[in-house]
Amino acid sequence: MVTYNEHLKKILSQTLESYNNLREIQDKPGDLDNIKKEMLKINGFLKVATNNIDEYKISHSDFKKLKSKCSHYLESYFFEKEIETMAPLYSNDTHRVKNMRLKIIEALEDKKMIDDMVDLIEKI
Image (cartoon, rainbow, N blue to C red):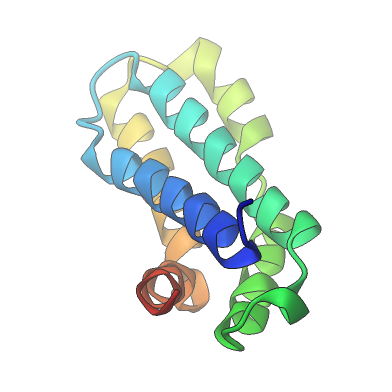
């Protein structure tokens, strides 16, 4: 039986893995698809963390703050439509691909969400 803490740790670890994959993309033509894939994974993990995990069953109170930051990210940042619009026209423009990737990373780092994830994973 998987505990809430183990489940949360796995979700947050997968989120960080996709975040690190985003940071490592080299901004070559065609990388927009990889950026979209990693962004969609992150959004899915964050939705699971915010919707399916009860913060009162997690032994660390830090999760409540992190859950709030994840909800803020999901409500405030919408890159899917922008990528869909951009893909047919600029998927081979390395400068635009890099800019999109950096904007997504910047949004994930907003309010120190990624730092809080790392800290919580270490505590669990």
